Length: 228
Length: 228
Image (cartoon, rainbow over all chains, first blue to last red; front, side, top):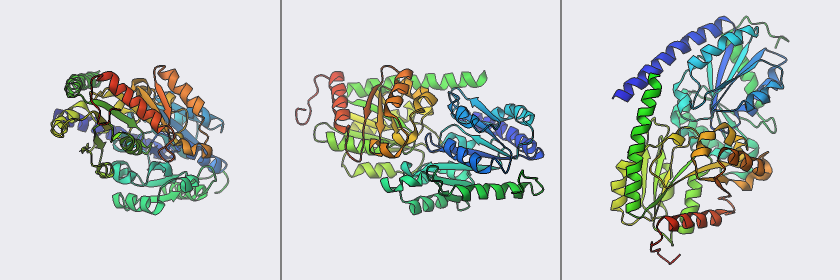
């Protein structure tokens, strides 16, 4: 019982800070997404493809969460957009407090229209920690198995979008896309699903168009770089 | 500071129970392994292949840890060996207490020579929770990326064995096996590494022979079913 109270207290504090983060980000006109998924599901590769597709249209920034190393930040830095690493040490997820302390850096970078936060690779714990984002995106790859939504329901329940990644490998796995979608929708009927491949580019434009639409809906008066 | 003390306390309690689990398992002649790794890395498939290879030689039992569902237990039950599901609910890892409560069931099944525990799919949290096993086995698949040992060092540091799985997919990924091994050995020079494929069977016999050797070293007087 004591442990449950401690957990409730931690999550309640996190929620308070997340609400504040969301308010500040929205005031600054930044639409923010929180990318979650297993290690190796392809979150960083998707971020790279998203940047390549949208960097001439909107201003982007990235916050990279990892237990150790700044390898992902190094990958992103080649695009010459603002990127900041949060190294969590032992923590298995980002939390709202970590993002809160990164926002002053973000706001110093000037106008950011889309903020992409890559969470620590973990299908479990990030589900419980609202960071203040506008959308949570769960990534699973076809090599992980189509039953994953049933086995890790919380993260599919909390997310707004599911990206089924690495569909170029479909022919070499036992993964059934229809079954995976059915399992995911059983957990969360409102989930918007895209099948994508960072290798072939399949589905990337659909995903990016959706992201831009959501951004526009949240800030209908925004001025895009190239009148997207 | 308060949170650190709570965590220390939880881990200290877990360690005490783990020591007790290990003592009881060893007294009963059971060699136990704790399989950890990301969702979809192939832990259950490896357990299936291990059972197929060893079931006529030693007595085996399996404990399956999952957040939700008993899908993995259903997969294992076709081998007619004792298998028990632990559904953790929200917990992102098994702990020694959960195993402690499963041991009476295990000991009722008669003599178990090798106990395989499949942990919740998670590259982070299981590293900290000793279950009382003799060996921790970390599984990563070639679709996850060869930098993973650097990004999730704790689990590679704690493990005794690394199984690099799905090597049949090597030709379709950018994974460099040598680099992955080098990264893993940088974190833990004592790690024993096998490259395997549950699809082609590559490396499975090497892994199973190693497991049997370890079992024999821990219980040199054991009587195997077929004088292995």
